Image 1 (cartoon, rainbow, N blue to C red):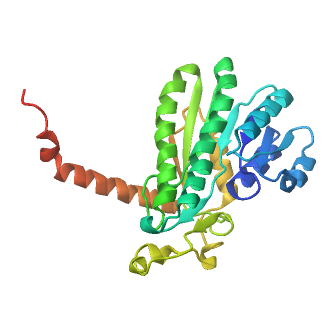
Image 2 (image 1 turned 90 degrees about the vertical axis):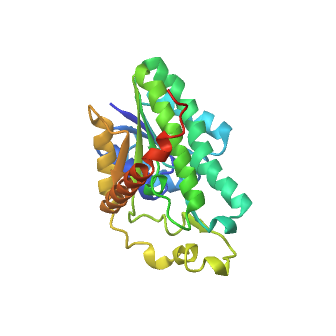
Image 3 (image 1 turned 30 degrees about the horizontal axis):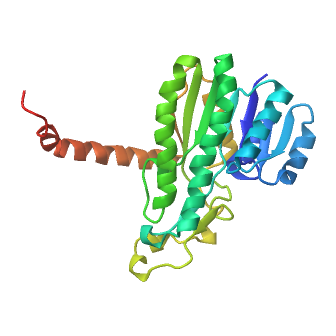
Length: 275
C-alpha cells in the first residue's frame, strides 16, 4: 500500500488529492496549519488517514510531522509539496514582509519538508517527490513577478534534485497547473496594499478580483487523478502541465524562446575565444 504525505490539504489541490488517494485505499498523511479542518476527512478513513497540524515554515513542526508519519505507516512513499499561496503586485509595489513570507512558504517550506523526508526515501532506495509549481513557473505573467519567482525557484531546485536522487531510485515530478476552480484566487491570494497608478494598465489589470474565483477551466478532481497517474507511471514526466490553458501558454512561450534564440544565435556563438 502506498503512503502519501501531502502538505496544504485544507482546500484546493491538496484537499482534492487527499480525498482521491484515501478513496482508492492508500495511506495518506494529510496536513494543514489547522488540523481541525481535516477531522471529517480523517474520520471517514480511520485506518489509512493521519491528520496533522503542519506549518511548513516551522522546522520543528515539520520534523515532528515526518516522524509521526514514519511511526504510523513505516515510511513515506510519495511526498507532495503542495502548501503555498499566491501574491500579486507590480515589482515596485511588492511589500518586503509579504514577499519574504511568500518565499518562506512556497520555497523554503518545501525545502524543509523535502530534506526531512529524503533520508527515509534514500534508505529504502525508492520514493516520489511531487513539487507543486505553476504555469507561472514557466511563463511569468505581469503582476505576478514575486509569485513566479518563487515557482521558478521551485523548478530550479527540482531540476537539480532530480539528477541527484535519480540514481538512488527516487523520482521528482514538478506539476505546472493553469487555472483550476480552487480558492487560489480567493483566500489563497494576497496582493500589495498600495497600487501605483503608473502600473494600472499593466500589473494593475491583474488586481485580485472575486469574479475570477470559480470561473477557471480546470477541474481539481481531474487534477488529482492526473497526479496519481503520473506518480504510478513507469516513465513519469519531470514537468507535468495540467490544464489546456497551461498547455497553450507553454507552447507559445517555447515558440517565442526558440525564435529569439535563433535570431541571436550568431551573437551568442561569437563570444567564444577563437579556435
